[in-house]
Image (cartoon, rainbow, N blue to C red):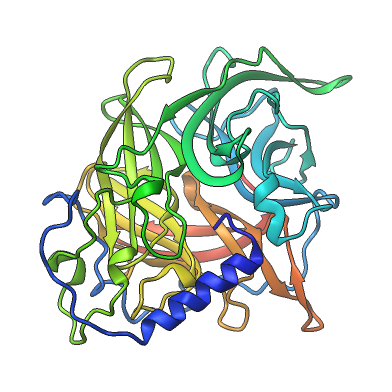
Length: 425
């Protein structure tokens, strides 16, 4: 969630207050809901239970990979087919960063994307911002993804948050730039051939809510573009976080499901969805918005950093969410949530019955965040807010231990813990 700490606290309090107000909501059609869009319903999002299979090991210390910077949302450089890429034998990861001259809560207003590199996929060194910050779009740049073509061209997809001449507003647009990277033993990593920055998509108000259509106390979403090449057709997409568009906020019965209690007033303002846009050219500069892959109207406001992992005939749609972004009347942990289907545009159903794939330990519910599932079941994240070995509250801001996840059908299981930020192709 890209907001300062004090505002976040106020939003969480607002959500808490809303829980006490109950009223049965109408079940007429939502303005932009489509009959065949899969849903994460209120019936699904109940009875979350922490188990050995979904609870991450405790974090009470970590190695700060960049002591002068906060580090959070992280993603690897991938090839066009989604596999992990290397540059002259080096793994590369990108992450949101901000100088520690800014506060932990204020870092989101000063986010820039930097790269990190490692020979063994374990020991990381920080590089630079790989683009011209004066030419970058947005007042700051939020999360995205990175893909390298066979000729070495790197496409960096990102969120243009706000506009340079307006300060740190919450407007969000999907953007991209290109560059090349090379490594030699004398000069280290070099970034060359920087391309233009381009807007790829903006919320349309039909499938995806605009800033003007937003209701409720939590910011709207149109961010986190994740590149995906369909393994069977070769068609290419960006998958992103959105909210259901339209001016009328009501819930359909499919969003509620079979639940005993009335739906609290205000739940209709929580309308997160997972969006998708199809590439119209090979240069990946033109995209057409499509109906969402999944919607969570009345369940959750933010389905952050969505991405798809394909394994044989199984398609896994993963997203992350916060405790405080669940709709009134629902309680879920900060966690990685997953949905399973048999095709990219299939009928996604919550994994493990509720959707919960990874949660933090009950005694430290915010220790890590922003999980991303990579090929071969590696799950990266960052250290968020935790308690150290002496029980003292600490702010993290560096790579968290990678988790190894086993996927089988519509179920998952954490198998083991790996090194901090560890990835392998």
